[in-house]
Amino acid sequence: MAIRVLPDELVIRIAAGEVVERPASVVKELVENAIDAGATDIRIECVEGGKRLIRVTDNGCGIPSAEVALAFAHHATSKLSSAEELAEIHTLGFRGEALASIAAVSQVTCITRHADETRGTLLRFDGGRLIVEEHIGRAPGTTMTVEHLFARVPARLKFLKSTQTERGHIDGIVTRYALAYPHVRFTLAHDGRQSFQSLGTGHLRDVLVEVYGADAVAQMVEVGNSRSRSDGALDSASDLPISTHGYAALPTLDHANRSRILLFVNGRPVQDVKLGYAVIQAYHTLLMTGRYPIAVIMVRVPPAEVDVNVHPAKAEVRFRDPDAVFSAVQRAVRRALLDHLARPEPPSVLGRLPEPPSVQGRLPQPKGEDAMGQAAQPPLSGSERWERVGIARQSGGWGEQESGSGGEQDGPKEREEWRAESNGPGSGSRQLPALRILGQLAQTYILAEGPEGLYLIDQHAAHERVLWERVLAQHELGTLPSQALLDPVPVTIPADSAYLLAGQLDLLRDLSFDIELFGNNTFLVRSVPAMMIQDDIANALREIVADLEMGDPALRKDLEARVLRRVCKRMAIKAGRVLSLAEMQALVRDLEACESPRTCPHGRPTMIHVGLKQLEKEFGRLG
Ligand code: ADP
Ligand code: MG
Image (cartoon, rainbow, N blue to C red):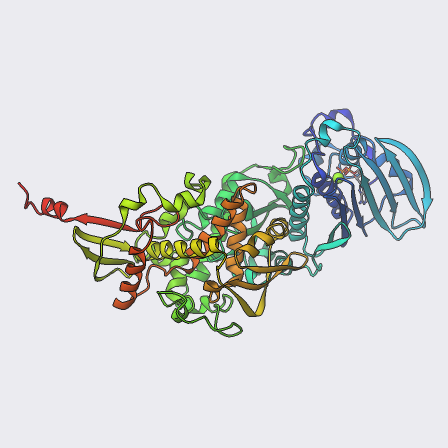
C-alpha cells in the first residue's frame, strides 16, 4: 500500500500524544518500522546511549523514492486507510506519526531503496526541515540515522538521564523485540561495541539463551505446547481463539520484582498490570512472598479482539474480553509449571537443573572454614531444592520459616547504616546465656534449655547471624577470604541489568569477588568469597544483581551490605536439614558468641524464648 496522509476524521480517532520521550522511544519506533517492512536482519547502533546517534538498518522492503519525503509528514502511513482497518490492526505502526515526530526534534538521515527500484534515495532533515534529497546506491532496505536528539529542545534534553540509564532502556526495548520476533536477527551495538545479538533462528528459546544465558534457560519451562500453538484455538474455557506461548522460569529462578515478567500481545510488547498479575497468580504458593516470576509470555488474539489504539506509545492495549485473556494466561503458565513440578518423580525435574555446584572444577574448600562444616555440606539436596520451590511447605512440611523472608527487601532496616543494624538496639544486654541442646524439631528448630527456660532456635536464621557477624568482621579488616574457581564460571545477565553489574565490579572486588565482563552481557566469575565455593555461582550472581538493583546506588555501604547478606543467606544451613548434636552445639556456641544473637541480619528473630514463669503460668502452677 502506498504512503498517504490520513484523512482528518481518522486522525482524530488516533490516540494522540508524545511518541518520542527518550532515545529508547526512537529505537522502538524505528525497529517497529523495520519489522513492519518485513526485515529479517535489523541492526541498531547507538552512541552515548542514543543521545548522540541512533542508527537502525534493515533489509526490509524499503520506501519507494516517490514516497520517502511523504513518510516524514504527520499522519502519513502506508499501513492504514480506513476506520474499519483501525478496528483490526495487523501491523506494529498505524498512525504515521513516528517519523514526523522524530524528525521534528533531531537530525534525521534516511537512506532507503525499495525492492522494486534500481536506486536508492537519501533524505536529510534538520529540525523537521528537508535539507538534502538525492539518489544514492544501496541494497534494498532502509537505514535511518537519528542524531542529536532534542539538541534544539532544551526542555526535553534536560529530562534525559545518564548514558548508562538511556542505554539500559534501549537494551530493554531491543531485547523485547528480539524475543517477540525470533526469526529476525537483531544486532545491537553501543559506542562501536556489539552488546547483543539474536541469531534469527525462529526459535524463542534461542533468543532466551542470548538474553538470559543457557543455564538460566535450563531452568525455564515452555508454556503452551506446539500442538496447541498450531491449532490456535486452545482456550477451551472461552470461545475466543486465544493462544499463549512462551517460557516461564521454574521457581528456583525467581526475581526481586516484576520487571522480568515480559508480556507480548500479537507481537507487541505491552505493559499490562492485570496480565502480569495473571502470571504471578500462576505461581501461587510456588514462590516466597516478595519474590516474582521470570517469564516471557506471547499472547495471540484475533486483532479485532484487542484495541492497540489506546496509548500514544502503543505500550498498553485493551482487550474486548480481558477476563478470558487473563484466565488463558494464568492457566497456561500454571499448567506448564505443574506439569514439571508435580511429576511423580521430582528428582527427574531437578536433574534438568544445571549441575549443582560440585567439587568438580573447584578447588577444595579450606579445612575448618566454618563451624557448621560447610565443606562437608553436600550441594543442595533434593529436599532442599523442594524447599526452595516451596513444594514442601505446601504439602505441610517445614512450616513458614522461609516464607516470612519476603518482607526483607523493603524493610526500613534496609535503609539504615548496616553497622548500626548489626549492633542492634541494646545488643549488649541481649547476650545469650549458655544453652544446653535438647534436640531438633521439624528439622528446622533447635530446642535448647537455658537457666531461664526453653529456647527455640531457628537454625537457618541463627546460622545467617553467625555467618553475617563473621563476614562483617572479616570485611572490615579486609581479610574476607577469596577463593579462585578452578574453572571460571560464565554467567549471562539480561542486558538491561548487565550494565548495572558492569558498574559494580569494583565494589564486588572489595567483597572478594573477581568478576570480569566477558563480552556482550556475559560475565566471567573467577573468584568468590571462600565460603561460597560450593554455591551455585550463576544463580548466586543473579540474586546479587537483583539485590544491587534494589539498593541505593548512592550508598555504597547499603550495596555492600546487601551483597554480603545475600551471601550469608545462601550459605546458611537451610530449614529441613537434619543436624547432628555436634552440629547443633557448634551452631549454638557460635550464636552465643555473636554481638546480636537474637536477630538475623534481616532483623527477624533467630529464637523464641519460653520462660519458666510463662510455662508455670500456662500449666496453672502459679496462683
Ligand atoms: P507508521 O509506522 O505508523 O505507518 P511512521 O511514521 O513510523 O508511521 O512511518 C511512516 C511510513 O514510512 C510507514 O507507513 C512506511 O510506509 C514507511 N516506512 C517507515 N520506516 C520504514 C522502513 N524501515 N522500511 C520501509 N518503510 C518504512
Ligand atoms: Mg512506525
